[in-house]
Image (cartoon, rainbow, N blue to C red; front, side):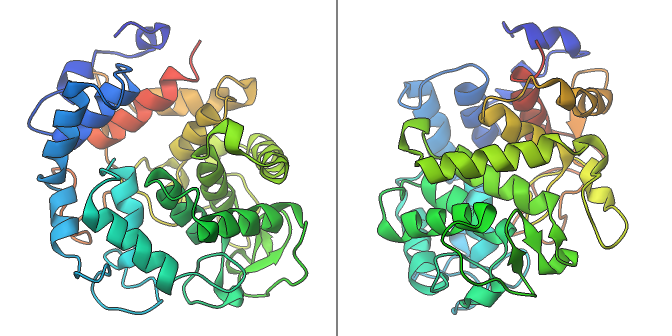
Length: 330
């Protein structure tokens, strides 16, 4: 490793992350830690191999030719194998945007899963659209090359308006209940998970392509995240703080952990904000003697294919941690 942040690690996990027997990890590590361009032969070979290897291969093999998983329709269930989850997890795993099954999934989601206002939720009605589900699907659709699709632009505009209040004339008690991340699932209080997912969506948009409205929404969202304590999940809640905030996992569904908040801040150029120091320290404290991290919430037995072996270090979570620390440790 050549970046200054590696001095904070107890070991060098990069050779482990670059092993050829885990091509999905190798692909992302080459692109995101070694800075190989996406069209470099080594990256292209790793990405092609990843599409033929679990966990990506099992997700694609379970897909119906029409683009859905498990059952057709506009519902996002069942957890964690339905079309919503499968598309989101493929994005997190770095699936090839040019793969025909990935593109068919994007088509299906846009044809069947979008509410009239532009967002995505547990049904195709505006009253069922929260920040978390919309943010995750926008992130996937942009990553898979759909930014110029009018339906994706409409989803982005919906999400920005749901944050700033601009252009939104109606709010819903059970989902997006007010501007600024308020969510009916969280008792009408601003939701930290929803804010992180929305910021992930906007971070996927190249900065030169962000509208003024999106930039305002990003400013509001980053301020909200940094004004609360990510490392403990000290966001407004009508129940006790979820322990998921401090359990670093992969993949991530509608929930977020503190590391994902750090990742988002890094992607948006705010990774070295001093308010993130407790989160950085929390992440560093969870590494083992080799500079590796465990998957503390792996959805074991719930995915199309498990991503990690029990009680062993996780390449996926280690990749996430290194990616975030690279942009947050001076």
